[in-house]
Every structure is written in C-alpha cells, then in structure tokens.
Image 1 (cartoon, rainbow, N blue to C red):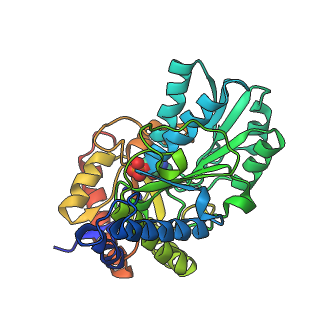
Image 2 (tube, rainbow, N blue to C red):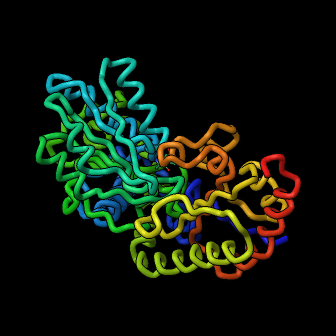
Length: 385
Ligand code: PLP
C-alpha cells in the first residue's frame, strides 16, 4: 500500500545527508567537546561549525546560539529564565492564546509558582494577533512578550516585526517560538528585532532531541541547568555532538533552497485544497488564507469526527493529524481553533495536513482518490449529520 506522510509539523524524517554528517560523531569522532585532547578538539570544531550554520541561518553570530534539547527546552529557558532574572523590573508577561503547550505551560508555571501575571492576547478568525491590542497590554512591569512566529496547527504567521518594535519601544524583551518557521520562512533576528528565538531540529529533517535558543547579547536570563560551564555557562551538560552536527547540516540544506521548497509546498497544499473542494461540500480552511506556512493545510470537515478521519486515512497509508501533535490521542478541543472562534462541531472535524521534503503531486493525487470516499462514507454513518 502507498504511504503518504503528511504530518511534518509533528516531526520529519532525517535526511540522508544529515545522517551521513552525524554518523562519524557516533563511531569514531566520539570525543567530549569539552576535552582538550584531539578527539575533544575534533568534536568542539564540529560543534562550532554547526553553531555558525545555525547563526548564519537566522542572521546572527554563532556566539548568540545556545544548543538545547529542542523547542520545549528552548521555550522553558527563554520564558522561565527571563522571568526569574528580571523580577526586579516586574512580574508581568504577555503571550497569545494560540501558543504551543511548551509556551502556555511555562506561562502557567510562572503565574502559579512565581507570582507573575500573564496577559493572553486573543487572535482573530485567522489566528492573527493584533499588534494594537498587544501594545495596549504593555505595562510598566512587563518584562517579556512571547508570541510564536508561526502556528503549528494552522500555520498562521504573526506580524513579528511589528510586535518586536512594540517590545523594543517599551524596553520589554521579545521571545518568539520559531520552531515551525525555521527552514520555511526567512528569519533574521537582528533585522526583525527579536531578543530570544526558539528552534528545534526535528521539524526540518534533522534529528530529535536537539534544538537551540538565540539569545541577543545583553539579555538577562537565569541559566536553566546547573552543573558545568558548557555553552558559556548558559546550559550545563555534555554536548550532544552528533545531534548538533545534524542540526547544522539540516539547517544548511533547508536554507539553500527555501524559496524553491516554499513554492513546491504551496503548489501541493493548493492542489489538495482545490481537489477536496471539488469533491466535497462543507469543508473549511482554518488559518490565514495567505499569511500561512506554505506546507500547512488545516481543514474542517463538517459532520465528521477528526479522530475517525485519522484512523480511516491511516488504513489507506495516509498519515495526518488532528490539532497539534501533543493534543493527538486526546479528544480535547484544539485551543487554537477555539481561540479563532471555530465552532466546536467544525473544530472536532479538523485535520492538519503538513507537507514536507519528499512529498509529491502523486501524493496529493493519491489523497484526492482516497479521502473524499472516506469522508462521504463517514458522513453517511454520522449522527452529526
Ligand atoms: N513549539 C512549537 C511551535 C512546536 O510545534 C513544537 C513541537 O511540536 C515545540 C515547540 C516543541 O519542540 P520539541 O518537540 O523540539 O520539544
């Protein structure tokens, strides 16, 4: 049976070039990057080369990149680290209603454990934060604004430059979770005015368990891990050298042909949407019509349950998801769609198709052969009809 993987916002396969680049650092260049001998120096050299690649990809110097275990840790480090280091200035943080759980739960933590107040900015029907609304929420005691670059469920891209300007004018740090945007959208942290930016390698055909945090020089934040002087005393722990090398290679490849890949992704998502619209009634696109990640297509199918769709798609070899990866498996309503005002029955029948490297027009055509009959059959059986 044909397999079509359309869940790249959950995770991506590691590219062969990335695996090849990592391999020597498991088998013979296994040195600890902190050791002074030749094996240690070889590992350190590879780490610094990868740091340079990550820094270059986001428009900054390598020294401003701290390697972490992934997006979740980077978000924790940024939010809790800034909150703890700046309590003398205030205990107020601004975020949005559609953040990834890694950000949402950190905000809840600083509220419950550190006595912070958190303002959660609503979004419009496309999942877009209104910068004017955000501006009105800034207070004298605001220490951080954390708004994601692009949403993982619906792909909407936020007005990052405008938000950063508001933060900058008010002397507030600006963090953005760019886990879904890295490798898909141009990110220039200096030009955009970003102070802290979270990344993860496994969303761009790199390995799992490695990511990074950009920290602009001068940003005050408390280190999260204690136990050594690694990463300029900002993140203790022996470096994951193969992972870091893989991250560097993955980002290098992703940046080389970002435009070509963007064009290809847009063509595929548009083809799928147009084909489904032709075959099926009452399907609705969630997310911004064009200010959206080109690989992401979130569609509500009225009168069907998302979970039933996923299981039936899977029987035909099509891998997609309901909501975010972390929400899959629970029947909880997507907080993102709820914040966008999507009616409960429509959010229950929402599916995220996220395309990536390796997907082809044939994949889309296979989906267009298999998906409409599944939807029609489930609708016929559905008590929701
Ligand atoms: N932030 C966003 C927007 C994500 O989509 C994800 C992963 O789904 C994360 C953070 C967490 O990243 P990681 O899986 O590397 O911890």
